[in-house]
Amino acid sequence: MATATMVLTRVKVQRRFGLALRVTVVLALLVLAALPLLLGGDVWAQRISRAAIYAVIGLSINTLTGHAGQISLGHQAFVGIGAFAAAFMASRLGAPLGFGLAAAGVAGAFTAVVIGLVALRVTGLYLALVTLAFGLTAETTIFNWREFTGGGAGAFAPRPAVLASDHAFALLCLGVLGLVLYLDWRIVSTKTGRALAAVRNNERIASTLGVNVTGYKLAAFSLSGLIAGLAGGLFAHWNQIVQAMDFEFQVALVWVLMTVVGGLRSRLGVILASAFFALLPLTLPNFLSSLPWQPPFLNEAVYHVLPPFIVVVMLLVVLRFFPGGFGQLLRPATDWLAGKRKQ
Amino acid sequence: MKRRQLLKVEGLMLRFGGLQVLNDLSLSVREGQIVGLIGPNGAGKTSCFNCLTGIYQPQGGRVFFDGRDVSHLPTHRRARLGMARTWQNLGVIDALTVTENVMLAQHQRAGYSALAGMLGLAGTWHRERELRRDAAEIIEYFGLEAVADERTGELPYGVRKTCDMAMALASDPKMLLLDEPASGLSPEEALGLADTLRELRDRLKLTILMIEHHVPLVAEVCDYVYVLNFGELLTEGEPAAIQRHPEVIAAYLGGTAEPTEPPEWPLQPEGAPHGTA
Ligand SMILES: Nc1ncnc2c1ncn2[C@@H]1O[C@H](COP(=O)(O)OP(=O)(O)OP(=O)(O)O)[C@@H](O)[C@H]1O
Ligand SMILES: [Mg+2]
Image 1 (tube, rainbow over the protein chains, first blue to last red):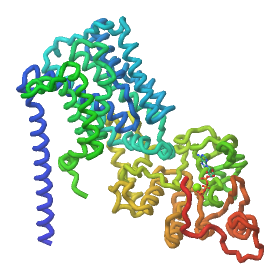
Image 2: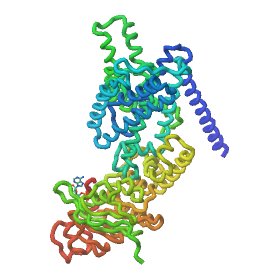
Image 3: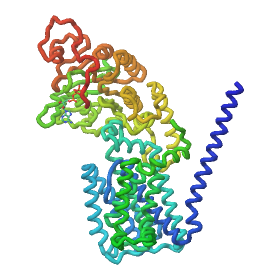
């Protein structure tokens, strides 16, 4: 008896110790992540905002592709419409930022539902083509609609006084990211996540289990659009000016592929990959120009196409070696942090 | 006293291109009955289930369930009225664990809206815990505890099949539509299934319509049997009568019936490979 009790106590102590260790590690990582914001000055605050906005976009794609199994190659349309809506609210109507972001989310959701209605009819490759065509069309029509977007000159999206500093704005972006992470976590922990998994894997089985497949698909589109629109609104105020050329097809391509590289349904993986691709265009030119040898073909135009090129290469590596993306590589660590024991 | 009809099908017509899969099929199942639907491969049994559940939209005919005309209801609405089914090629989601699959099947009785769950409103956490507990109970009833946290895709066929059955029950249905529940089971397991089915009927007041090739099981548990051949109803009746029906014997053997033949079941040999739905 005594030995059994001792063993039990030891296991309990070990578990408690394990929990304390895990909490410490998580806190340390968070502090580490917060260091650039605390010590890095405005440049780092701007970078963190941009990384957070990209992560929100990645999670928006994760909602649609990761959870519902639907593809969108026209995400720049949802994000862009959100950005222009926020800019319109701020500069034309002088509405408070909260209203602007709400309008951005609603505009994104509304646009996405329209696409979702199409997605009920077509799937797979055809859906990819439809969303691609939609994104390209939105780029040339809506985004060049002078009254709404200011035409080529762009639309201004001034920040309110409280968010004028880059640090305050970074906190807002991180707050929105936190909110979206919470939503994602609740989705996978409730019947919604299970229903979406069923829809993603087998619509017939899903429907015989009482899952409204149509409803869940549309809901996934609208939620994804809402989150994308919100990200667009943040982007507008981050840059303080929005132009049609910010939302070209190639950014949508980078977003979709970075989400896959990060790992569908892996929150941490998506965040890391998104942050990487958010910072890439900012750091790449400096990095390349600091190299001891400059390849002769490097110029502005090449910088522009490097991110899509890099993401495609990473995608190939990921698909070949770890199909679950960064999330799969991180799984042992995240499982340990989440307190899951080995099977 | 005659019991109420829970399921009634009238004049089902289903065509795929030039192929008449179901031709004027009518059948009914009374509350508390276990009814068999048998017939040779390709007779249209699974297609009939697909029409009942709304997966296929038949060109003609009506389906009444629990006193309502459900002919034009989408599949998920029929499921919510209490129709649950298993699949010939298994209705489990391979990417989910056994527990998750069973909890998925509880979808319609989760008791909170998708939005409430997403926002994490107060009641939803509690309900999730209750659902998990119920799921654990069902999993225990079917003896799946050991694999509860395994992905179903990685489990052997028999276990996944049991999981499919557990899922059908988890939705708290009025009626079970079972598509070949004994296929892939050993003869002893198949007879064990007979006890399970009777227990489900008696304890949970379930009504069962079952497609099955395994004859001893059909003879053992079914109150009534419909025989389908080339999409048409060949005959119907109590198992004992069906067993001696010359046309049934002919349909299964594909030749003329010998009326003097011993009353042995002429149906498919056990373990014969079945097509998938
Ligand atoms: N979606 C479909 N499209 C075209 N033909 C179909 C379809 N579904 C079923 N059929 C055809 O309908 C016929 C009946 O098929 P069904 O699966 O209903 O037979 P079954 O009685 O369940 O046979 P088994 O015992 O092999 O499961 C077959 O000839 C099949 O090819
Ligand atoms: Mg069949």
